[in-house]
Length: 515
Image 1 (cartoon, one colour):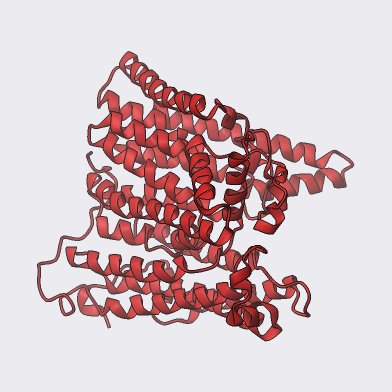
Image 2: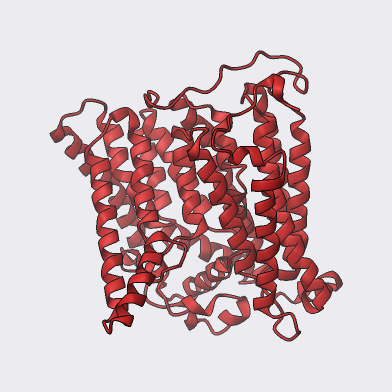
């Protein structure tokens, strides 16, 4: 696929010389070790404030975990380890990008070493920043019990609170597709519903998604004449990617990994394999249905007439929906997931632009004696309509060579014009923009700020604090937020190595300027 014409090309490849002394490399192992230490600190912190099931009897009897979780000093130490470790990981990621200045072929082994070194401790963590993995276990038990997860919430399972699943979604239909339902059921059948071993297997599934991303991101970048090593660093070595897909065990890892694989095969004239992989991705979380019209355009080919485009859109949708229909026959639930798509979208959050504006509208409306939240909901609906308009524009207009970029904009419209944005929604977008070009100007600075913001928020958001000692959950969150925010401000304004990244006119150092 041709490169986007406005994307500046990456620096020329450096000649093969001795790795540690060649221009462009400046002791990258220092940053890798620093990130490994940060990940280790997060692992230790997770033992004290990560999510632990009430049914995890063996872990709850471990003396170290007992002290970290049930003694105030241990809990404070865990919060500090998590906060400092998370921000140290961000610093290591930023410094690795600086130390690999030039992005030559010789940088790939260091990026892979960083991804592995930073992933291993996080893969050993108790679940951090999200309790979704416990919902996966509960939903697997719903499947094993022969219930319909698109009708019956996991509140039907008598021990769901013991498992650790969030009561907020206990009566909600699952928003996941048939593929992930089978994964949930299979894991619960293998483990007998034991939360500790189930978490290990769900993390293996998440790591498969990570591996797919690591493999296909460089390939997609090369199709767009974008430096594959920089794209891999921006995406798979990104702390936001690692905490959501490894530490938090979100199934979005498998969803986006399969989608990127399908995108690559479709872009390299293997559309049937591409559609199959996209369909499997939809079978994890249906949001990747947005890929289908762009896959259809790839299949139709450059310069296709409108009748040909519609024909290939029809065939693409027909193949995908046909496979999903067969899956629905097998599991007897049909297209039940369609009605459950609104489950996670029924809330808002203050930092989402649409959510914040909706809050302002509701507040002003109530102050004027009107039904403020009805007005806010109407605004949310208008924003969703706007996202559909943007998607339509990206589907029907634009250069064929920019199809993946157009897909990125369409996907971004879904995320950014919703009243609820989670950090893992942002991680959906990063690979698509990275493989089509994120410039070394405001674009990459915006990514740095976004990563730091969501790390600070994650560190202070979900902490499993023992409720029966003086350190309350609110105080623990405040401590975590202050430490993480202080570290973030240090990186932006004080740290001599990283503050230059946030300057208005910063550009990567030339090899001779590295120190």
